[in-house]
Image 1 (tube, helix red, strand yellow):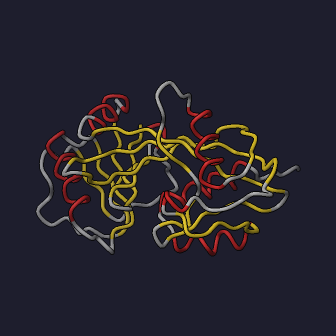
Image 2 (cartoon, one colour):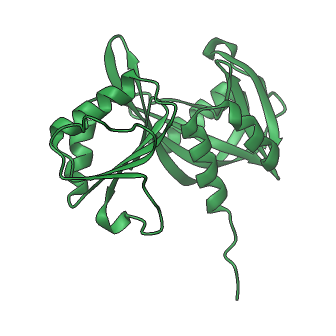
Length: 228
């Protein structure tokens, strides 16, 4: 599980998921409290962190700009318990959206000064796919057909002094019609465009890390397996 906390990857993994080929610049084991001289740079790994340590890590990630930090990873024998505890520190909001394709192009929206993918919060009684379809069609004024799920993204923010953890379900979508395509201005969307994959990758430099992560997951799911 990867959570973007103040745009920094905060990974919760089991030992089975620990990649032996990935190197961490700093590694700590069975820490009860935050190390006094944590470097806050590159990739940092904690084995079996205590609850107090997790609370402190989340607070610092949410309140400080750590420009030299690449990621923090927590690894544990009980991933379910770790996820449950981290989630308990937030109010959880659910949303859904999609990456819309038309032949070899994909749809991006420009909102709040950044390129993004269309998405929105659930309405009562909706399934993730129903929410994703409605939000994409409302925000872009297009007709789409939803396909398979890509992944979920998680990111945090503060609203009315509350710490929010937003879970967004993402689906592949095919464009059925874009003859009336226009940005939904009342949702703060200023522009909407079709991009070739290479151009979308460049545009997403001006986006959120969670959206670049989503883009990579989408591309990865479409890579053809190599044949011997």
